Image (spheres, rainbow, N blue to C red):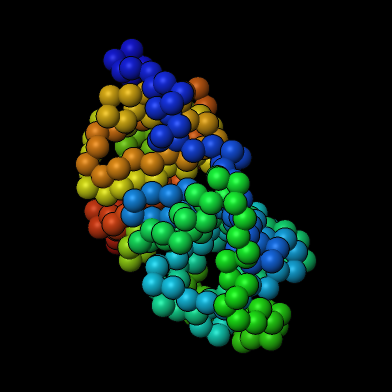
Length: 277
């Protein structure tokens, strides 16, 4: 694939690929900071929670999906608490009150909003310009109490809200390319595992796609330009733009997020579940 394409310049890569460590942080609430990657249809927030953080309960119109990366914390959602461990995903519908409550250790999460949050985009722009804002939710009310102050969700309630990614049946997209799909209303998450040397042929779809490389390195071709993507980098592929990818000499773990939701992926997952019955 590399011989047929033009290698993107550093300036071109900067317009499509974000390196998380280079993105300025800002505070969501005292003890909770984030780095923002903005796309047209969605916003990704790579959040860090210090020990003992009690977020301010709030709501917004955006659907919010939270993936636990490391450490654990509780999410207070509509008056009940849900434990979020690494590899857990919780889907919070728009308009539902919620807040994060961290444990006695720090934790990191990826929070995805669809539609996109323009208020976070504006804060990122001010942070890039060297400006400072107060914590986003500090003025929204009193912080939540301890997790023990609220009823714990039942097993049935937790099963309806929280997905353990490793428990999702794997779907083979092509040889060497296996994904676990977590659907939302406004977005679809695809946890993709790629073997070395796997190629995805050029294709396009109407959905915007955000590519989060969690492990490994790969080449991503977008609209005739070739981009090297490393772990800790995020690429944004607009809808209807031809793109393809190839892994190199190591396995890759990728989080692909699509918005609007990909009904074809949901159908693939439903077919696999039906075969397992």
